[in-house]
Length: 262
Image (cartoon, rainbow, N blue to C red; front, top):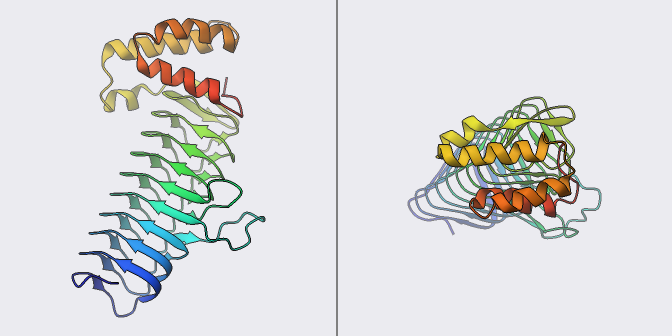
């Protein structure tokens, strides 16, 4: 069903079980096919492809040549009805690719709210992206990657499959990430290594001086005190009684399956 207020260019192709909400715009030469839901006020520009079983929320902007919901590149994929779910107010720039999930994992690729996905960013199958993230030009999230809220993955950086990028962390440009990057950490290089806290990002997002001081002390304890990971965690657990942000750091490290960068 297409809402009467939606503006569909006559050169667009829409087929299948497609539901388009109020005030959506669809540009020329865009192709929408499959089991598709597009939320109110979303702008879809020219030459966009939206396929598969895909749900897109409200007030997103999708730029030319983006491909959303296409078959993934996993050799195990056999055409199963897996999904892409995108939240609200995301900016999806030119030539971004967002592939559907696999039944071997979550069966869904999920993008949250208020994210900026820059030109030619690649979001592979079963990726989970939180809210308010920034994925730079030509960044690559391999299959099964998780990117937590307010994290940044800068241009030409690649995140290895199954890795996690913690909240408020920042991956510098041209980096190769093969282990998990804990929350709040600035990482750079190939392979990426820690270079301190993402202080600029933390300050921009409202972290006060006292909490920044606590996080800085936690970082020093974990990375610079010459302790094993288990020894450092013991000290951080005491600090976490006053700071939930440090508890999140601990939880992230202790649940890491690939291990964290050191």
